[in-house]
Structures are given as structure tokens and as C-alpha cells.
Length: 280
Image 1 (tube, rainbow, N blue to C red):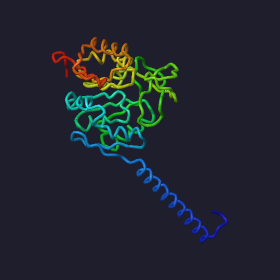
Image 2: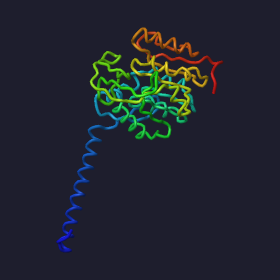
Image 3: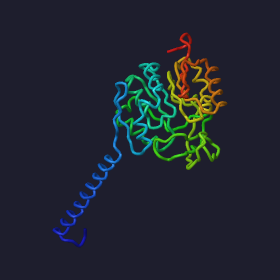
């Protein structure tokens, strides 16, 4: 600080330090305010404790309905997933089932796929806050019937939302019939290419991608036929033709339907490999 005396330099330095302290205090206050306004909520379900970030009505809903929304998915994790399994969570959203699987079975490895930016951000935070980053690996890619550049057509940009559609074509509506409000470029891969490049091979797969399930299964023909794959839970598409296509693809891979909701309230189905054909 040229032109200033030693005492004046000291005064300026103290003033700058005071400003930095004030800014630091304000920053910490903002952080604590955000934590209060968007707190983490605790889930207790079937003896498992985890926390979820609740920053809007959708993430609040996912917290409130954790145990009731898809009890069959929790049943599948409890009964079909085994310790030591590699579990692929395709369409992980903010990670409610990835977290539950990792905490229910501490020796499983969960590979979570989620291409949407807002969901991916909360998925990462939820994994780290629940301290399961050594058991849950996240990939921000969409699984499809081809590998390359694609687009994600989004019907709601709120974190935690769903019903988006991956497609390299421009869509005005998602496969769920919702108007597209935003498109973002993403990378898409076939599941077969992913497994080949990473040497990760699942024993259990959860598949819920809001209507593009047939495309994911088309790109997973080798993975589905692998004797290592023991079980799969899939949310069947609403479209009758797409649902029939999924059933054909799973049957052709040597899997058979093990469970479906007898009351027809849930579109989830559990498929498994006959005992004599399983490996690993």
C-alpha cells in the first residue's frame, strides 16, 4: 500500500480483515438459513434409518411416502437382494431405493443411474450425507438402446421430479404425455456397453424410467441373458404395446415373472431366473 505510513497500512489491513470476517459471518448465516429452510428429514423404515433432503413439495412427498408409495420395491430389496450383490438402480432419481438397499444390505454395491441434473445433485448429496459413498456409485448417464449423444426431455425442472423422456429426437411431450418445458443434452449408453467398459455386472436390477423401459432392455440383451443376473424389478410402461414388448424381452432372456400385483394397483413386476439357471 504505497504512500501510506506504517500505522495507516495497519489500519487498512485491520479494516479489510474486518470486512472479510463480516462476509464470512454472513456466508455462514446464509448457510445455516438454507439448512433451516431446506432441512434433511429422517426416514425410519423396516429398521433402516436414513435422511433425505426435502427442499420442495416433490422431495417432501418422497420423504412422506417412503414406506407406502412402493412397498413392493422395499419387499424386493428385502427378499431378493442378497449380501454381496451388485445392484443396478436404473432411474435412481434422488436415491430413495439406492440408499435403502445400501443400508439394508451393508455388503451390496449399488450402481445408481440418473441423468437429470437436479435429481443427480440431490442423489449425490443424499449418498454422501448418509455416508454410503463407499457402497453407492453414481453415473449421470441415461441407459438406452444405443450409445451416444442424446437429449433428456423434462416436464418439470424441480429436483425430485420424474416422467422425463430420453430421446435423440425433439419431443413436444414426454412418453407420459406431459408437455416438455426443458431439454438438455446428455450422454446415453446401452447397458451392455456400460457393463463391458466398467466390468460391473449386476445380480439385481431395478428399472424405472417412465416409459423408455423397452429401449433400456433392447440395449441390455447380453446383460439380461447373463447367468449372473438373478432378479429384476421393473415398472411396466402404461402403454400396452410397450408393456408387451418388455415381457417378451425378459422372457427371451430366460427370465420369468415371479410377482405382479394381484389387485392391479401397482405396475411393478418382479422377474427372476429359474434356480437351475443361475450363476454366481
